[in-house]
Length: 246
Image (cartoon, rainbow, N blue to C red):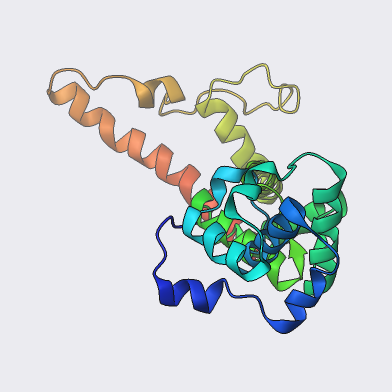
């Protein structure tokens, strides 16, 4: 949240409305001021502040005048006790929100895997997407740390599913060629395949990674076979992915 607020902004965003004032009820002192701040903060950010430092001083002063409590009382508000938990629950209920559950997090991760990660994998942008979706569902978003973990877990699942589905689309011959490329001659799945040998190009993954060395006739003549081998594997992957997507 920004630290500097103009007077007109304080009036527009931090002024209690009549139905909000009614929630103050018989709350007094620090609890009265703390509740008012939590309420207006959540209304703007759709989350609760985590610490007293999260609230700009002009906001505290502006609300303290409305509720008739000295601004200094705000430092006495208990951020760990029962009162703040009750206040948060009351505010969620008033605004029609609820806390995110483990089930909500799993559903969000599944939604990312199935509908989002195929075309968007920037973590910072995904955080904004997840927060907005939680809010649209009237769910209070988890902390930023938990959202980050949720996204990274979903990314891991998406990649695992993607590679597994892609592999299933490969023909046995293509899988054998990949093993050859990686020199995986001890692969349990293909160890009995009669063609599990380097093909007549003699190309393996170690060859593709090797430094080309000095330019000469021998290194020049080796390039077509390397490129052909690599292109063949890439083409097989392209057709497999295309088939998988539909």
